[in-house]
Image 1: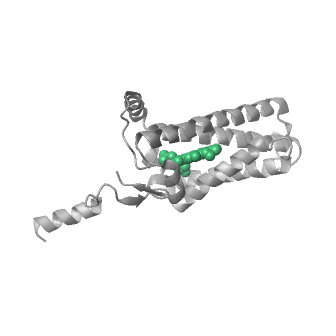
Image 2: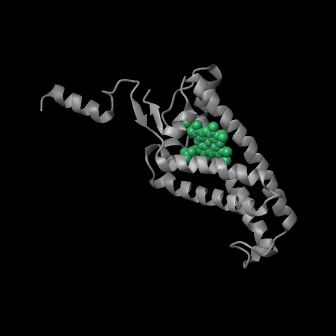
Length: 203
Ligand code: HEM
């Protein structure tokens, strides 16, 4: 193989031969199903708390199971689903936020560092909310922890934690959706459409 053919082959492997408007897969089907199911279950659980406690608790379990799946998928999933692809170092996050304030943030094919940081906070807050909900259920003698010592934990404290983190999550969701719109506007791309189709322009 001569040098020119070798270079062309190498560029093909790197994807450099594609024009910049090439559409490429970014979010796999499971990430997309995860995301939109999470949205549905979160809002069901949040807005049907006292009125329809059965739906509230099933939606909460749904959120919890989705989070467990996403935790696993973050290690074994496709490229942009992996934590290694998007969890930012404090240095990268700081530089990204600085560039964002200056009005020229770098464009990322996967999650940008600020979006990724918010997603991690969101998921952690959801985990605390669902776990405290499962503990609260145990106090009432139901759920997977009802036969454990959790059933004797202080109910008032658990309820405060559950409500606080549910509200914190809602605030983060507002910031998350705001960030999605801001990023879509700055890079002239539709991130919501990308989370539906799974595809984005390469650059
Ligand atoms: C209905 C309003 C929502 C819209 C339009 C929306 C949109 C999006 C978009 C476009 C992304 C990809 C961001 C990127 O390109 O980097 C994303 C990611 C994500 N969103 Fe939302 N979102 C919404 C609500 C929510 C809610 C309610 C939650 C959680 C309670 C949530 C949790 C997440 C998570 C965890 C990810 C990361 C997905 C992954 O990597 O698996 N979103 N969202």
